[in-house]
Image 1 (tube, rainbow, N blue to C red):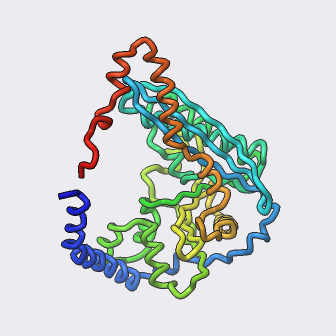
Image 2: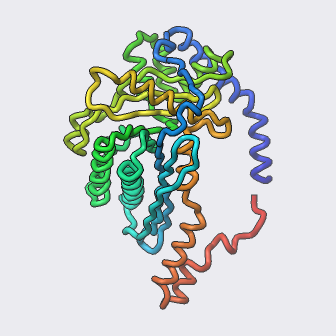
Image 3: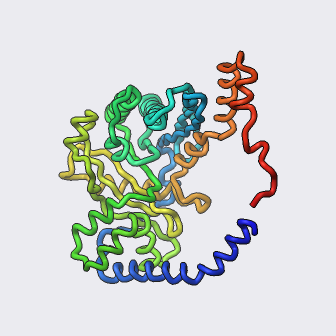
Length: 361
C-alpha cells in the first residue's frame, strides 16, 4: 500500500476526532476572551492614505543564508539586502555578500548565523549613514537581537561590535530604528496580559497553550469580525524577558529599552511584532508607538502581502537560492579534491539516492 493511500485512510479515520479536539481548544480560547477584557490592550489604527507619506525616506534590511557540509567543514554563503526609497518613488538596493568555510561542529551553525546578522547590521549601518532615512526597518525583533545567547566566538564579538555601531549611527543621524518580525512563537504579550488580569485556573492553562499571534487573531475574529477594513495594534509594553536592561548593557554595551507592540495591518494579515529603542520610558513612548504603527499600516495595505512594502522588497532580494549554495559547494569540492578523482567520486560524485529504485511509496 502506498504512503498516499495510508495517509488518505488515516485522514478519514481521524478527521472527526481532530475536528472535535480543535473545536474544544477554540471554545476554551473563546471562553477566555469572554472572561477577560483583552480589548483594553488593543487600539485601532488611524490608517492614513499612503500618499500622505509620499517623500518619506525609508530603508529596510533583510538577509539570507545557505550552508552545506563538506568533508569536516561547512561551506556558507550569505547575503544582505537594503532597500532604500522615498515613498511614492522607485527605490534602489544596497547589497553585500560573503562566503567562506568554517570547521564543522557544534557551533558551526551559530557562527554562520552570527555572520549573516553581522552582514545585515553592517548594511543597516551603511543605509543609516549614507541614505539617512527617516525610518530604518530591520527584519526581526531588536530586543531578540540584543539579548541573544552569547557564545565565546569571534563571530559573536564582531556581531556585537557591528550592532553597537548601527545603534550609534542611527542615533547620530536621527534615524528611527524599527524591528519588524512576523513572530509565531513569542508569548511576551500573553505574559504581560496575565500579570494584569486575574484569570481562573482553566483560563491560565488555555493561555499557556497559545502564543501572542494566536491571541491577536482570535480577538480579531471573535470581537471585530464585522469590520473588513481593520488595522489594530496593542498598546506598547515591555516584554517579560530572562534578560534585564542591566544584563544587556553589561554584556553588549547597548543601553536602551525596547517598547513592543503587536500590529495587524489588515483583518486577514498576520500579526507582526514591532519594537523600537528608547532611552527612557517616562514620556513620549505612546506617541512614538502611534507614529510608527500608523506609518507601517499605511505601507502595508497591499492585499498581496499585508506587510511593509520596503521589507517585502528586501526579503525577496535577500533570499538565498538553494542552487547558488549548491553551485558554490560544487566549485569548492572540485578545487579541494582536484587530485582525488576516485576518492572524490566515491564520497561526493555518486549518491545513494541516485541508485534508488524509482516509484517507491
